[in-house]
Length: 223
Picture 1 (cartoon, rainbow, N blue to C red):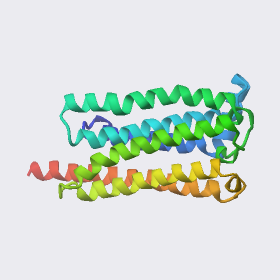
Picture 2 (picture 1 turned 90 degrees about the horizontal axis):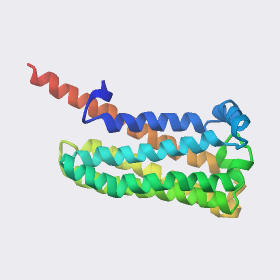
Picture 3 (picture 1 turned 90 degrees about the vertical axis):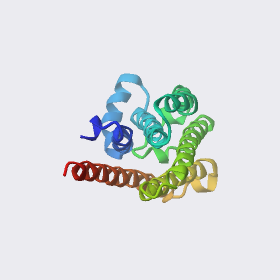
Picture 4 (picture 1 turned 180 degrees about the vertical axis):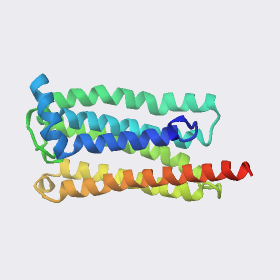
C-alpha cells in the first residue's frame, strides 16, 4: 500500500533500497552473486558496489521524504535536483572508477569491509562515505525543522537517530579504512555493520509508524 501513497513512497523506497543493499553486501551474496558476476566481468565484489549504490539511493529517498513534508512540489523538485540528485548522480560513476582501479575489484573477500585498502579503495570509501554523510546531514537539517511540529516530532526524532547511526557507520568505515592500525581490527567491520543495521531498522520502524498514523487518521476521518 505504501508504494501508492504519495507521502510514503520515498520512505518505502528507502526501506527497499536498504534491504537490497544489506542483501548484496552479505557474505551469501559474495559467495553466489559475486562469483557469477566475476565470471562475467572479471571483477570481484561487484555486488557490494551495487549495494553501495542502493545505499546512496536510500539516503536520497530520506532527504526527499523530509523535504516533501516541508516544501511545495516546485520547491521540492528544485532543491532535490540541485542538492541531492546531482551529487548522488555524480558520485556513482566516480565510485565505479575508483572501485575498478583498486583492490576492490581485485581481491575477493566475503565481507567487503575486510578487503585491504589501497589508494583507490581508500578514495572509494571516501567518496561513498562522504556522499552518504552529506545526504544524511542535508536530510537532518530538514528533519530538525520538521520536529518543531508536535505532530511530527516523534517520527522526526527517530529519523534523526537513524540518520546519526548511518553517519556513525560511515565514520567507522573511514576510520578502519584510513588508519592502518585499525585495518587489522577484527571487530572493525562488525562495528560498521551494527551502525548500518541500526540505521536501517530505525528508518523501517519510523516509516511503519508514520504509515500507521496516517491510516489511523484516514480511518477516523471516515467515521
